[in-house]
Image (cartoon, rainbow, N blue to C red):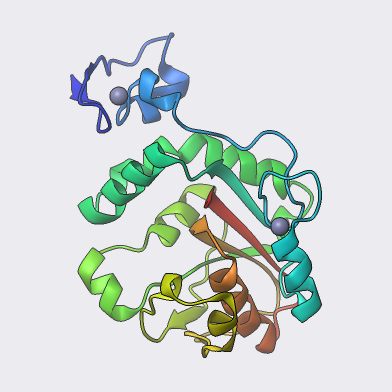
Length: 224
Ligand SMILES: [Zn+2]
Ligand SMILES: [Zn+2]
């Protein structure tokens, strides 16, 4: 018997014909808690995955500034339940929590990139060395590893900057925290846990493009 990491309820984790397909998720959260996972299924902004009928206001602005990504695809909405799970995941430093997302994350990736899989390299958005030491693992790399694709840790991060307290204009003006550690000349999919303002993804994409990458996509677990 395992306990659900979200609600604490005991779970039957014996593999059977009834549960083998979802066994990995069942090891960590119960089926009731799975219902809180809010998958983005309706219309979405074709650039950033925000639930929206059209290209959203933010993406129109990014376009005017000079867009650097082809698009970001997010799988789930960042709701209150997800907030708790993600903070558990990051601060427990527990790799097993990623199993909650494995099946849907991989299925969505395979569907979105079906025609280009052979041309793509995954680049996880890095943490700064300081943050990496505090946390012990990079959740973006943990997600990338579940996709069975070539991974290259092609960029580094100088310092951890608290972007959330800055305005959009300040964020744009602030210097790029990323640097290139090994240039890539193939198409890249940046992998991260969450897309919120889109600034981080675009800063990372800019560095890749400046260093010879022809096209950058982003694939993120959550849309904030
Ligand atoms: Zn539960
Ligand atoms: Zn958008």
